[in-house]
Amino acid sequence: MVRGALNSFLGMMHAQRTLGETDQAGVGVRIAVYPRGGEPEITEVSAANPGSATRKFTRLVSEKVREAGGGVPEEAIREVVENLIHAGYRGAVISILDDGNVVRVSDKGPGVENKSRAMEFGFGGAAPEALGEIRGVGAGLGIARAAAEKVGGTVTLEDNIGGGTVVTISVIGDESVVEEERPSAPPPQRRYPDGVPRMNISERQQKVLITVLECGEVGPSTVADRLEISVSTAYRDLSVLEEHGLVMADESGKRLISPLGRDLVEAIINTWVR
Figure: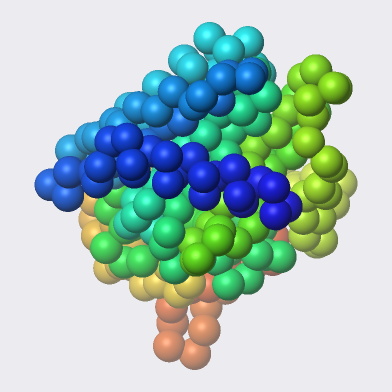
């Protein structure tokens, strides 16, 4: 663990000495490729906004992983890169190690207080100003872990030296260079472990359900605003979800996610992992 954080820290410091600070007018990261027995190749990359940054940085890192002969899944890379918005991209360094079989994303943001729950579906920490740029349903690290596990890999989360977070995606490459094993956080217990009952709801109603999970509690006007649909449509969709037991109403009439609804959202999100 110490070795992993130290590698990220040294990579960041080398990049800072080599390239200077990122242009504050946009969003920037440093990508460090560590070849065997050589000095890291450092590239500074910027984008206009978080949305374009996720696409651009993911594409570049994935290309470098493939060039190195590694197997870290692009889906896992994308979700972890997108999570950099929580840190405001401060001190962001993406390191590619072990012939592309390890991708380590470090930042100097506020860190993750509850690391034991950070990979749970629905456990989100997106600030309000970030929700317009990212999915915001508390799914990113969960999707990354699911994508990594499909190829026999892991995702680990730890504190960075001096503050911030280090997320490491590892897949099995040459066993002679695989780092010490670090178990990933156990998956949360689900109410329906053998599969969520089939639900006859539309794609739009799935989005409404995800919005309920994302916001905590909502009324029709909030759903209408977030999904750009009419209030009457939002009301009908919430009623359908309530009839299916996916949401429940509180004393104020706002809807909250139910245990079944949470499990269904996880099942929906798992389909996003190819």
